[in-house]
Amino acid sequence: MYRHILVPIDDSDLSSRAITAAIALAQAVGAKLTGVYAVPEYIPPVDAMVPVYQFPSPDEYAKQAAVEADVVLKDFADACRQAGIEFATTHGIDSHPYRLILATAKARGCDLICMSSHGRRGISALLLGSETQKVLTHTDLPVLVVR
Image (cartoon, rainbow, N blue to C red; front, side):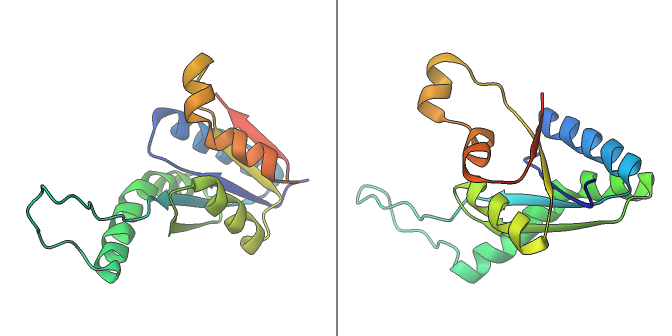
């Protein structure tokens, strides 16, 4: 069965449901969990009409991203500790979270991805796409989608 489950986290209510499902599954099969959070890439605004302000350097942005990730991943870590589940957390800077999710799953040797679906439908799904859909179409790993 599954030994290492990756749980992408985005600090939404649906993401919390994925955490709950992943913990229950991990308890049932004795798996460990890894929570991953994607921080968007920093792109400073470029507009001649805007006065020039001091923007963070790439290193400063990476430090701010790490603090943000710690805040977002805290509930995951607390829930895993309370459930007695072995876990790890990680984050990365990528404006396309599905790429980070897939790279993390490969690098960490995960054998299942458990993630939420935001359930976009109709034109918004067509225009905005879905990170879940991108994960599903770009991986050979099983994906448990929680709604």
